[in-house]
Structures are given as C-alpha cells and as structure tokens.
Image 1 (cartoon, rainbow, N blue to C red):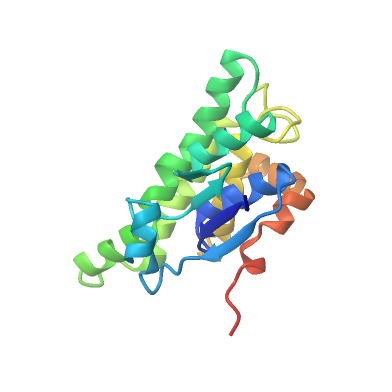
Image 2: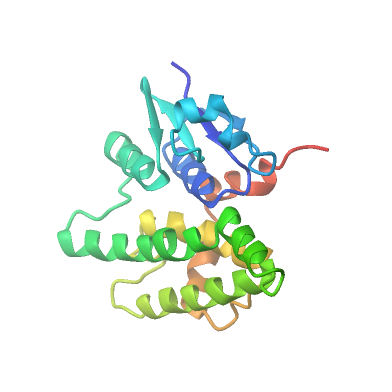
Length: 211
C-alpha cells in the first residue's frame, strides 16, 4: 500500500513530517491541500482529517493526523531515534519540540494571524503579528539550548523531534524577515541540519506549486 502525505507546501506541520519520511528512507507521494483556497475545509479533507488540517499521512493501512503524533509513529515503527532512550532526555527533547510546535507555531498559524489582522481593523499587520511571537519564542528556545545536552543538534549529536520542529520554524522566521542573528546556538544547529539530505529534500521550495 502506497504511503501518501496530504500536505501544504508551506505548512510547518507538513514540513516536519516530510523530514521524518526522508529520515526513514520511505517512498511517498505528496497530495497537496491548498490552504489558501480553503481546500482543507472541503469535504474530502474533512473526511480524512476531521479537524480540517494538514498533514494527514496514509501509511501502513492507517490515516494519521497531527504532526507530532505522526512523527512519534514513524519513530516507533521505523526506529528513527527521534526521542532519547532515557526519561530525562525524552523530557528535554519534548520540551524543546513543544516550545516550538505548541507555543510558537499555533499562534503564528495563517488563520490565527489573519483573524488578528481582521479583528484589529488593520492596526495589526501580518508582519507585526509574526514578529511579536516568532522572535521572542525562538529567543526562549535559544535559552533552553544553553544546556550541557545540546550538541551538534538540539539534543546531542543525533537528530530528534526537537530538530524536526525547529527547521520549519526557522524557515518561517526567514519568510517573515525575523532577525535571528542573536541566536548562535540555533544558527549552529541549523547549519548542521541543512547538511542532511532528508532536510534538504523536505524544503518547501521543492513542493511549491508550479505556475
């Protein structure tokens, strides 16, 4: 049975899953769901993802939703080592991952930001909203990385759940011109991550619609 990812090219959650699929060495098919034209709210997407979100991963006869749950499924079934073996390490990696995926990303979701802009009557801009939350959120992650367990990557020298969450958020920071020059630990980790084929292959530019 084919592995299919229903995703949107710029979705942070989809980006995380694409990296994990690459790390797992899986062959998979991308079926785009255009968030800008509200395809995610169409009956077809709601049938596979009741929340009306992306991504949805069809794999092993299952339909999986929620990117962090998908990442842990791939970790457990494909032995990716995305969470450490020790309880303390798992707690740290999850804290770093959640700091991005549950704190920064949701409030910078396109629908949330658009609502804020509309509700403010234009007093809030998209750029202003993104800068208000991405910069301080990443600064907090930078402080969390001031820890003996930080290595080549967020936790030691093996890619973890935290790294898979950090990559898309840094893409978003660059997209919205957020200054990350004062984040040396994150900058060094990103340089190492960008050397990985699975990370390069998952980049949104490779999935950007043509035309």
